Image (tube, rainbow, N blue to C red; front, side, top):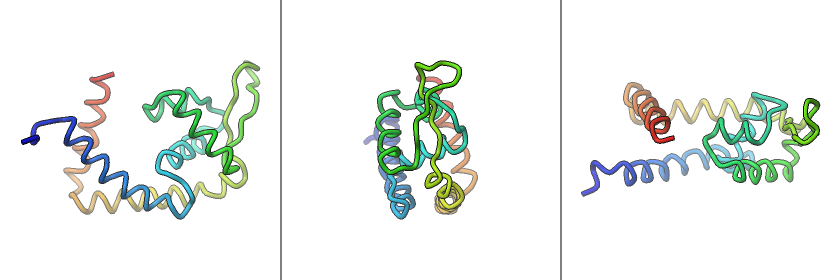
Length: 138
């Protein structure tokens, strides 16, 4: 009935993938969204919440809320911007830095697991196609 419906199929896939990633990030005390924000801050120390939002394709208020959550967990801290004192740059704390290797390893492992479940070619073409659709709709 909904075989050709982008909304239904993308939402159903998102729910399945969310469960997989939730299980991976749970041992770190993080949701998948928090884990991805932390990974952005770890990869780009000094970035702004707007950079996080743009990188992840989420609204800035959502990024700010997730950064607040990571701040409460003492994984990320805000520092007043050097170039513009009105901006707050994001940096990983020592506790956040300690998670960099384990969280990247866990992320790579779940990606390999998902790829193995569906097949490498289908996995890559699906991710590529989804990125193209996202760009086309924005």
